[in-house]
Amino acid sequence: MKIVCSQTELNAAIQLVSRAVSTRPTHPVLANVLLTADAGMDRLTLTGFDLNLGIQTALPASVESSGAITLPARLLGEIISKLSVESPITLTIEDDSEQIEITSLGGSYQMRGMPADDFPELPLVETETSIKIKASSLAQALKATLFSSSSDEAKQVLTGVHLSFDGDSMEAAATDGHRLSVLNIKNALNSESDSGDHFSETNENFSVTLPSKSLREVERIMSTWKADDLVSLFFDRGQVVFLGENQIVTSRTLEGVYPNYRELIPNEFSKILNLDRKNFISALERVAVLADQHNNVVKITSEPSNESIIITADAQDVGSGSESIHGILKGDQVQIAFNVRYVLDGLKAIDSDTVFLRCNSATTPATISPQEESNIFTYLVMPVQVRT
Image 1 (tube, rainbow, N blue to C red):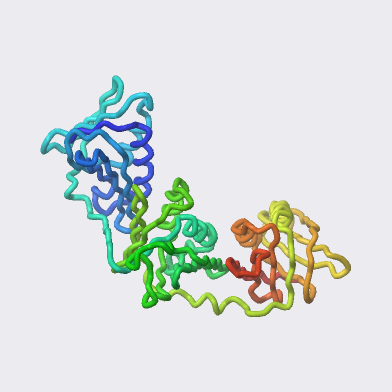
Image 2 (cartoon, rainbow, N blue to C red; image 1 turned 90 degrees about the vertical axis):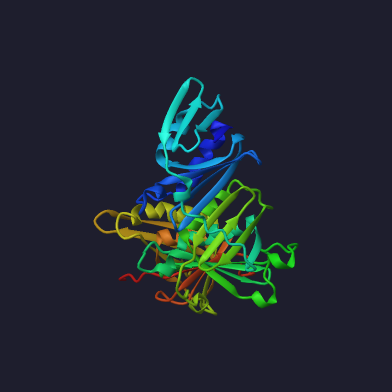
């Protein structure tokens, strides 16, 4: 196998697939990345796979002879990242050898790898259960929900994002038991796909829960894609494959029944606050300086005499602070407390200039949503009970 390629492109590819390389491998080969050279297509493909998450990417290369080998991901990455960007990199492996030679400018490095046959096969599934989704829609869904997923491995099904598909619409939801993010996107699927590439009427209400770790890698990869690019999703036997133009991400699904989160969202509210989103965020961030010193709790109170909302934090033995912002109240007076970090997370996931904070009492769930009444995004957060 002999390859000549760009240092910049090879370094970027190694950094990308290394995110799927196990830090505590159960087998030595899982600490490696798989390099596959194709002389027919003049392409070098790199793959990382920890048996749960797999990432594969390809780059153009001048391939004199085809071949494959696995190399230690960390060591390979460190060597390639330090080589000059001014010179192409040559990778050479003699026939029946497990040692690769890396040359660039005046430098030459040798590295011992493992046979490609030892590397586990990436679970690439291409079944009838497939869709093509707009990259912009998937990116929007992940931005709005990933932060609400749980980090507690004991709550396995809550450590992911639940994706539901109905016709051409997609709904994404995530919860950690303290807050819930729900985003519904109309026309998220490619309406111009062939009949076999999106869900038919018999496939309506299909849903799957995917680990947040995998979806964060999908989100990171998609940041380099164009908004109108399409992502193909294939579902089969507990696996999901995200297929882009030159990149593939595979992930296991999370087992278990996802909670019926729609039942958690109240149908009616007795108190509705209309607030400027940026002003609300700024005030919360200033008060959070003190709230962070104690329990992260801020109290939100409406002023009955005027259109003012008071945000306060009381850090015992440290100090206290308050902010007053403009807000329009509809309904009963508001007095409610929240974990300030939860509220800020929800507000930063919204693009609207104005938001509605809806609640019924100081002990029941509240929601934050954009000004638009289309109910595209709903963020539910549980209040914190404080002593008065």
